[in-house]
Image 1 (cartoon, rainbow, N blue to C red):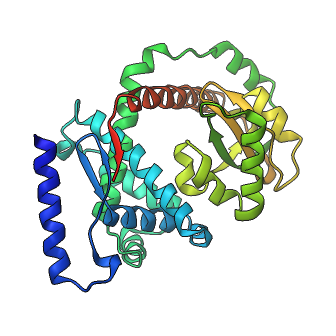
Image 2 (image 1 turned 30 degrees about the vertical axis):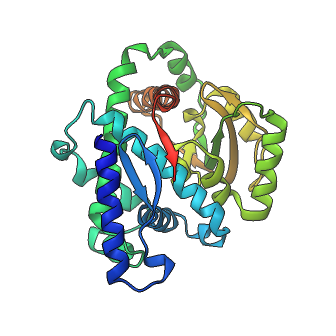
Length: 311
């Protein structure tokens, strides 16, 4: 009953908008998708497309249908998370970290202050409040995952300590990007990998990350940034050490899918060892790795129970 009422309201609003606006198809509001009780229109798709392009400008080069699919998949992930979070949180009251999270976000995009970032957003018909809402959903989702799974995290602290003690004074650092993908029913690993490789060849690694990656880094074209060798597990480090700049690894199996890593750059730094600080960083890194795995597992679980319908 509630769903029918919502559809009627959207439909009436669409008619009103149609009669007061030019007849261009871009100005007509159309229902594109229903996720649970959430209704998404072509305007939502347009805003999401603008948001994703603002984070990765190279997406402009993709065909419209491919860009629409990326926007749709991104919206589906966000709305599913929001539906689950509303069972636990009052989103209107969950703003305690929003200012600092916003600062961290625009600094990652190399903006000096909020005014500069907002001016950039306006050029994409976006505003700060749009971004705050998205960041709030991601932050609360991470908080929920932490509360659910923190007790299940297992860390071999003695192994980490031994690794720190054996490290050299010259530390190697790697600038990395990633594509984390899963196999859908009937897909074969080699076929999926070759499909991704072909897409990388035609559209570049960044765009391919937006298309195929299920990691949160996909919004940034898969960019991870600079990581030192101590922050990488032994298997991953072994793969990366064998790469030349701009090369990518073969699929590396992880607990949440298959990982493709691209080496963007590397450098060596002389570093004085601060044992306690390094130990805490490595423990945090391992916690985050395991929490990301739990996050993907939980998301896939709840997605199966969410009603999704294209209109």
